[in-house]
Amino acid sequence: MSEALLLIIDDDRPSRQLLQQLLRKDNYRLEFAEDGESGLALASRLQPDLILLDVVMPRMDGFEVCRRLRQDPNLAEVPVLMLTALEDHQSRLTGLEAGADDFISKPYHVAELRARVRTVVRLNRYRRIRNERDRFGWVVENVEHGYLLVDPQGLLLYANSKARGIFGLGADSQGQAVLPLLESQFRLQPEEHWRDWPRLPENEPLMLLRPETSQARASWMEVRVLSHSREILLQLRDVTSELSSQRSVWSFESLICHKLRTPLTKITWGLSFIANKAERLSVPKIKEFAAMSQGGVDQLKGELESVLSYLNTPSARPSDGGFRLDHLQESLTEIVAQLEIAPVAIDRSAGLPVTLPISRRAFEIILWELLQNSKKYHPQQNPQVQIKVFQQQGQTVLEVIDDGICLSPEQLRNAFLPYYQGERTFTGQIPGMGLGLTMVRQMLWEAGGECQIQNRRAGQGVILEMRL
Image (cartoon, rainbow, N blue to C red; front, side, top):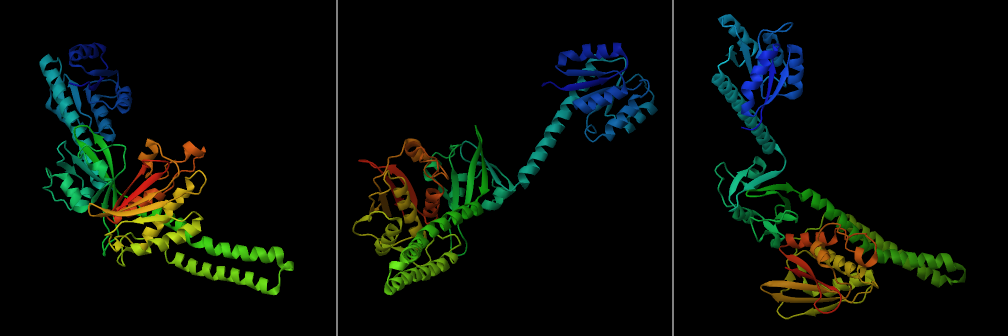
């Protein structure tokens, strides 16, 4: 038996010593009080498993002590065995009315005393465990996150109400195989982290993606492995709003850079020439530069209107048939001009589909992010970029290949984590990778695709591979 705390309240020293001798073999922790007042104070401080309470004591008898114990919310359920030499019926009735659980008569019968104490302690421990489990069960059933408990074979042991709602589980779901359940409603991302199910990595990002449909936007569940001994406890947290907010910020920043740089350049050039050289310019030249600035203002106005109409997160799901591959050169030309980098070489194989299953807006933001990264991580900010497009195993593969730096194994492993600090090793700065590659991967996942990054097999630079 694990050590239980017994509080003995008895004013008679020989009685206390006798109880200590009789109970010491049963591995109890014993505490003593010499009167009612000190007994109440000790009980409040120690929260014992059982109180052995003498009835006949000066100043405050055992009945009054028991009444006060039952009036204290923290002590009301602590078992009380009253020690009494009184055999009359009325005294025992008074003790029961005061809240006593049982009586032990003096002089003690050793076997009876030890058996009574052992039984009451065991029942009290069971009651406490049951109450704790009930409270824990209530908490788990009413939290905002879903919880799945899975055995080493991947079978469901328990699902709280939130998880049952997510997966539409009934009361008879225990013993159901969990992996088919997940795969029937979600895409498991990243795929490589789910391959050893139910042995899941505890420190890697795990996601469940419910793809976008014509009736509903995509939704995301973050999965955390909280326990990974024999049983696996999975926490499911809906992060759709959080990811949507992150992507809105990222896509808006990307769009601002993408759309506003050219018209602002026109306005700046035209106005700076007029401001700095007006006295040396002819009227036609002033008109020419003013017209340049006006053209920039008109273009800026149009771009701002398109930006304001685009504040909602761009959907990866195509609503217009998808991104046409014959628009790839046109999109790249515009992005290259705005980023002021060398033209991108395109190597297209034969037999490609006409469209990619992703919206044009989403794919152009992806291209912008990847080319901007190629410039950002190139030692001279002047990358030579090539895009290869080919078919492989029924998928369209696009490889964005640059000649910048190679990444360390750690950088390759963490490149898709939000705000991973990927610049530290070659610039000495730590501005971080931001959300770009994280959002790129999520949009490709939503379109049913995947991406990965690796170093070039020959020469400097990396290859960002997209599969759709």
